[in-house]
Length: 342
Image (cartoon, rainbow, N blue to C red; front, side, top):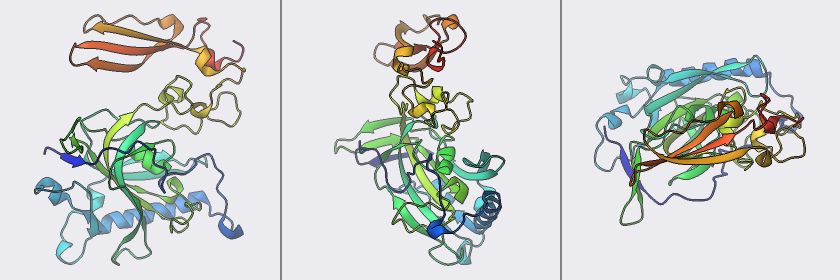
């Protein structure tokens, strides 16, 4: 199926609506009430989500045979009445194991739905992603209509810093790609081809837990649903130190919340002086660019830990430009920006 859609020009402002929350904040109880045990809440939230997935379906038949004007949005409804024989979500979702961001030893099975992965570049955890979404939270009763409540949405694509969205949403988006291509229509709208389409069912411990955004209406410990279309991604450098943030994920676990080289409480992707030696990280790396024809790939300096961080292809000239970073100029085996002795 060829998936394309025309949308208004992408907004340039970073989105900071209800999807966002500061991940480094401590979460406190509401009105002085002690917080629930996170392990117990994890088990309850997983059971609630699995019950939901067993009793609901999405509009998969519309995606299989899209009509003219179909907007390629996921809609979820109850398995009841004329819809009782539809395929339940539990048979169509994928899952992955995700660690609790605040308590060691607590894990979640995160369920997500891939209608279309997308034909473009894969989304990474620290990217600036261009997407359209709806965010909902579970209501008390699944068999009532509406089955959940809308708390935020975007009619047009917005740019989101994925280090600022709730963990479960971020953990799902990295399973998708942007659109294979985009074109500008005569009326100024953008046409995206083969973009990502999906949904994620977020347990409270990977969502807002007891700290929902003010005035959002989201109850404590709510399970969340995000449905979304993914269109594009930009490489994130949150602290603008010259190192793309994905290269500051030292243990390669696709999260920013446990890499803090100098122990100052500021994660490396937000820390402009990663080793705390008083020299900005930007001054402790060497950035190079190489432009070459296919087949003339340059040899990078392994002794200095020179790493490619960006690649661009000029479709007109067929020339390739790559950007690299030399991390270990003195060749002592420790990247200079992580070496407080250097």
